[in-house]
Image (cartoon, rainbow, N blue to C red; front, side, top):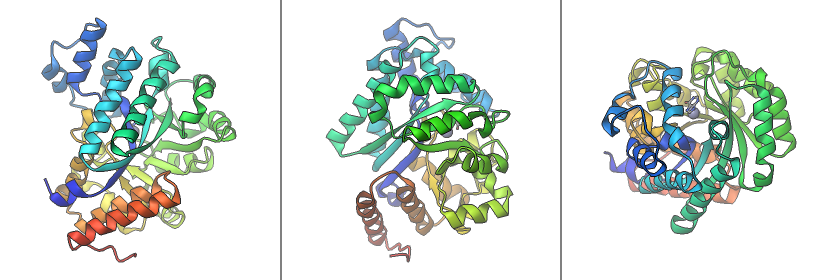
Length: 341
Ligand code: HPA
Ligand SMILES: [Zn+2]
């Protein structure tokens, strides 16, 4: 592992907390809650992490999270992720959770969010790690369910920074959620959506124009549409790109084919993220390393990706200035300069 990557101060903006559930914790929680899994042990479960596409991953992702029952379970899951991120010098995280995947199993919204919030507060207290929580709607479910979830979130509005949209993209276009996003906007939520992961570039345009999101999760399909790339670059609309996820879900055939370098060179505000690290073979450092080793990106480019992460985050302007200073200082220590300050 490269010391440059390990010590680089990082932010993570695209992380599904349920996708951080490692097989060991899945089995520990299953034992604690008296649940029998379809797999005999941890290694059999891990062996099933061989995906053909997004849907084949989602099937296992929803099965894995069914062991989450109590507030302590949600705390333990988030705490394990945050400890790991802290160990990789991740300074700030913006975390998705999928409330409908739990409330539909009878786990109350309050149980889910209280456990997650407590872990985030502890990470802030113990490590000075800052965070935001993003409520993500499941796009394969009807819009009415998203709107009902927004209502359930009302008592916890102050713990939530934004709303997002995830799950099966194809056939579930942004336009399906126009009313849910309008309601969220009225309630002061910041808005993001997954678009252009498996879906077409048009879904990126629609997320921006119909849902009025400020950031696109994935967005790698933009590479197919030069005019859209120009617009994203000019407006500095961030893309929260997840390289190892794209590889594991066969969005790209190999890391050498990943569009990250081209998107960066075209002036887009692309950022590095791990998406579902327990399932896709790596946390933040592994994603940076894949870009370095698989795509040949330079330390200077990796430094720019880290700065983009700060720019794209929901930190305050003062916090951004401080963290960017840390990242540039790290670059100088390794003889790497971005030339932009
Ligand atoms: O990468 C993803 N895409 C869509 N839905 C998801 N839910 C968890 N991870 C993902
Ligand atoms: Zn995602």
